[in-house]
Amino acid sequence: MDDCIFCKIVKGEIPCRKVYEDDEALAFDDIHPMAPVHVVIVPKRHLATLLEVDEDALPAVAAMIRAAQEAARIKGIAERGFRTVINCNEEGGQVVFHLHMHLLGGRKLADGLG
Ligand code: 5GP
Ligand code: ZN
Image 1 (cartoon, protein in one colour):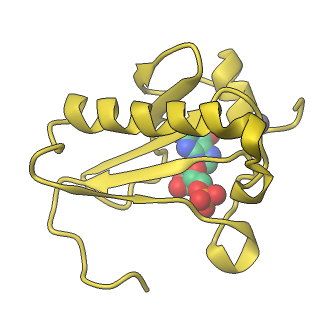
Image 2 (tube, protein in one colour):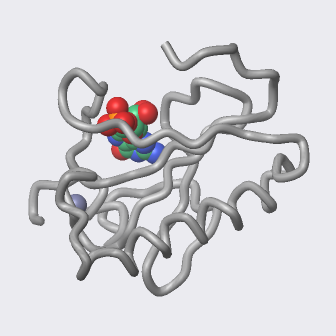
């Protein structure tokens, strides 16, 4: 997708602070962190939202989860604990329409999910 920010990050056209990368997924620091650790994990394949994940796209989602595990270990929060969030569409708070998972941690996170 030519006008997608996260596709541009995947292609290296927009810089990022890379945390982890493999063939199918990329993890990088969020530009506006909401916690001491705030990593965004994207499948390299463009999928706009969680609703676009069909059977064919499941390997990309599996890769996103694997990359989240690696990012949590790299950031040193795997054992302490963390939260993962996928926002979907307007009321879910999605702003960038390239499927992504937030990895949040490094402090005790608030109870509840808002
Ligand atoms: P959403 O609200 O769509 O779930 O989350 C999008 C996230 O992407 C936000 O937390 C925002 O700070 C982050 N973000 C948006 N543009 C950029 C960017 O150019 N670089 C990085 N590293 N993060 C970005
Ligand atoms: Zn994209």
